[in-house]
Length: 114
Image (cartoon, rainbow, N blue to C red; front, side, top):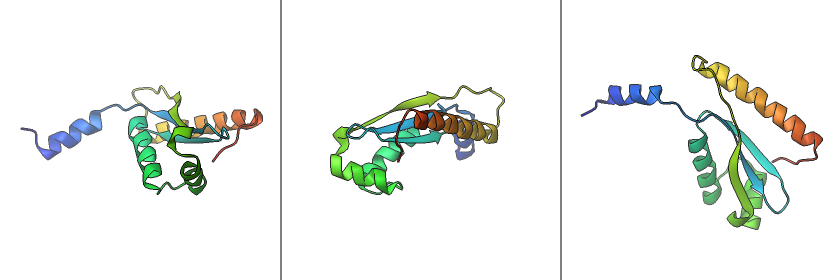
């Protein structure tokens, strides 16, 4: 049987999908973009918060309440492929820069954000 320490060390060694996910409002095409070092967990967390009515982005939450869950699409926006030796700080910095690049380009194309 594994000890707590062994389980913690095994968890630290796990590699998660890193990148940007989106929640898209299909009624008005507004986007909510968020970076994460664990895309699957972040996706589930935001979806759970919206269903509970406690999402931190109140504008997104209000639209969710108004239009209903069927009018929103969750998905991967961009996945970051980083070097195996990259530190967590380097990955978070890369994610922040990647998000800014995408938002700048989307704004040029007329996209709206939460």
